[in-house]
Length: 128
Image (tube, rainbow, N blue to C red; front, side):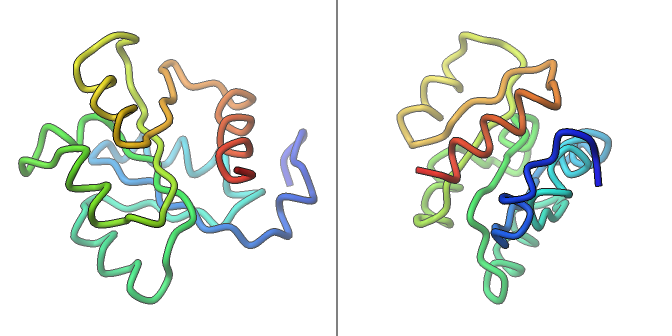
């Protein structure tokens, strides 16, 4: 177990999908969260939809690069997972994508990602 892990969260059985085409980015976020949550790395929306049939996520953390591929947009993700909380990892603080994502219920995680920030924001989103 990592230093700084909240043991109360670790027994909560909350499921998170880290959905991104960037394997290193997925692995980094998964590593930051795996001690406190059941965290799955997923490379495509289709795989996430299939996995959610049997294992519905409580939270999806989506990499912004995925929205540029396969004509995905924030509306598509919101429609596919209407009861799931959504976060978007973004690099630029002010963009049209960010505003669209916020309006669809996404919470933003700004790069560069820091362990403490990611854990705190995820915990806050899952407590609401």
